[in-house]
Length: 183
Image 1 (tube, one colour):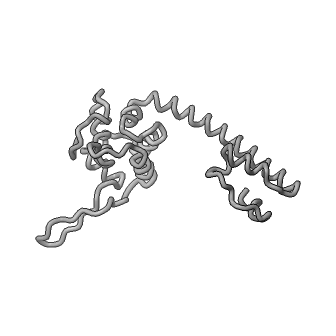
Image 2 (cartoon, one colour):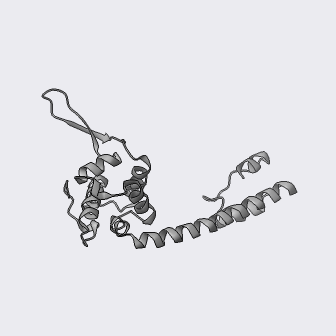
Image 3 (cartoon, one colour):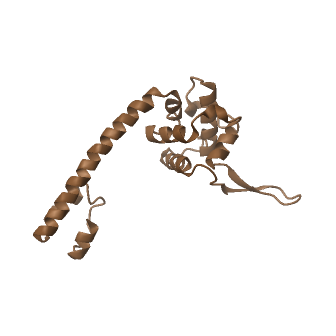
């Protein structure tokens, strides 16, 4: 689509989303040769078709998510939706295989890097990013979506709580757990 617009020297779309209502209205107003106009319309039909297919997949994923206890518990963490929870459960598989919540945090690469030399105190850096990149990416995106409040947990603490909660099968929502290491 962009190559067609560039090829015909069409200026940049003023709408934020070229494929939204405003963007499509703007696109319909542009002067394009007949063959290019047909190509644009065909691409828009393909985009609409794939959008409808994705809605069906999302609906099926939601049905699967509501049948899994681990997914419902993970969804109590602010910012975590069904897709993130299902991805995390798929990456972790069995939460019971981790002896402690810290092991799960380390498995996902969400633990801070620690540097220490000799008798100097340890310095903590950014997360290690070792382990399951896809699950870590999904959880980081969820953390960016959650509301920013000073009384809320860090992502690694929320994952620790998720590990403990999924192992213990407690009925208490994860979002209400205290924010201390090892919960």
